[in-house]
Image (cartoon, rainbow, N blue to C red):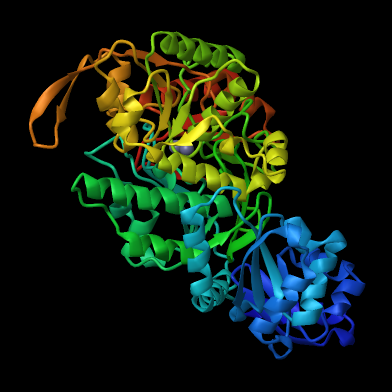
Length: 630
Ligand SMILES: [Zn+2]
Ligand SMILES: [Zn+2]
């Protein structure tokens, strides 16, 4: 690797000889510098900043392996150095990275003032702390993922080194005079999003989803690729939802062994949804497209990135993830291709508007030529009501139902709408507007717990509460639904049930619907998008009778007697006006807009508007269309 030589030269020039650098390695897109004298870096903190700035890479300073003290001894020292208030939950050592992972309720106290405690740990033990936040609620899945990452640390190190060889291959990339994209799924439809971005030397997949609302064509057109999957250079996942990340384990099942770039919360939430998908299909005695070992393989290959962190992912491609304000860790993907020959932004699912959970979506990019824009609510009639109105209406329907002693079922996506609705209900409760019991199903609870491990991804107010151990997701009003049987809960009076799946395509929300549907006192409230073909969509369009099969295999017609309401305004997607405002506010203005992630009429309508009224070349691509970007 030519780059390694350059880095070594630069580091040698920048650092004084007393730093005693013993080794410099590439770990995927990052640089690891091993030193025998870590104190040098504490005496002058500009060193790391300067190297990171010049190299435009994340720099990890590690101590030389000869300085690592015995693990048991190190553990003892760490427990002495870190104040008890930090609430250390776990300490595990990863020799491959000279790192000690410390999981704590208050990571700030492990870091200490000005990083003091962390530095003492390094100086006294040799191990560099990798500090992670413990969720304020127990999360089985998070514990499993962290354990898995620890267990396979050696293998992950090897994966990162192999990845680095490809990213920094010395091959000449002068011939990169073209860039194209191929729509593999999720165009003129919602579901199975996937895009290939290709140059003469690089092939990258952005998203690889499953359309869970469709039984007929649930997967993207990977068979249209003209090369085997193991020739892909990288996979980028915008966010955890199944229609974006759901099919990623299949890539591994089919032989892909390369990096998966996403935010850390996306990695964790994606695994949660993958395991749930396998579980739900198993219960329905259907064959999932992949199994648990494929999901675990994905976790190993994930390279988590923060928002706005510029990352080399191929000799001619740089990736930056930006906040998309859609769900925890959701990103818009910026690709800087061929030394600036082309700049592409793929919005992913994106909310240009207020949410209780997230900071505002990013609208500034260094450069931008092509925008790939979602259009879930892109049609001219897709105008969502004001958020305030939506909340008032939700409260009204809930109260009217409780007055009749009925129960309220709110089907939600376990990740996203689930938490947004929980925040809304908790706010009602705090203001004394609502005093009903609210049951939350296991999936939604797990997802909420993962939110509390990543407060830095949440809007300030929520972040503060999580940091003060007053997480709204733990509020008294919420009770875990598995504490009682579903029959018991359904027989209670005046309770709210939050359950996934959000489109009634399976899972606990469907089980509750079966218990509540036939009484006119109950209510079903849709707060999120209902995909074409889903049971949710059918009920929304007024279907009155649904065939159900009981445990004995007998089929009967279930009458939909309960009140059905759709309350728009809680969506994690932008409505038509917000999509248009988003483009108006984007800096710089894109030269071309390609429309995806919307049903045909919505995608076409938005595309026409952008072309005719905004003067920007826009196209609603179809699946399998290819577009030359340069
Ligand atoms: Zn989504
Ligand atoms: Zn989506």
